Length: 53
Image (cartoon, rainbow, N blue to C red; front, side):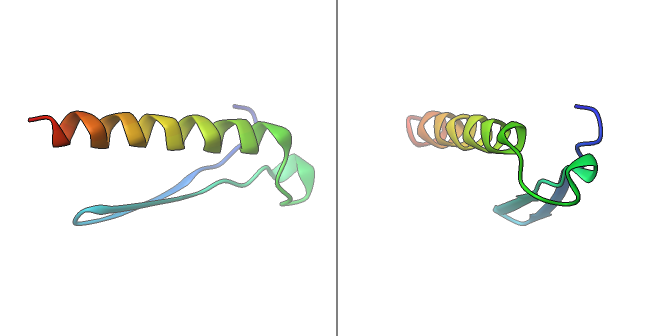
């Protein structure tokens, strides 16, 4: 996670995350893509678990 700086915003029931890699001149890298895909999968699992309660 070197030089990766996630920015988290959480307002009530909405979470937004921006990923930036400074050493890539603020462009999206394959690492950012992998992290965002992982975060989306995790969010879906949390949502599915919450719906089952």
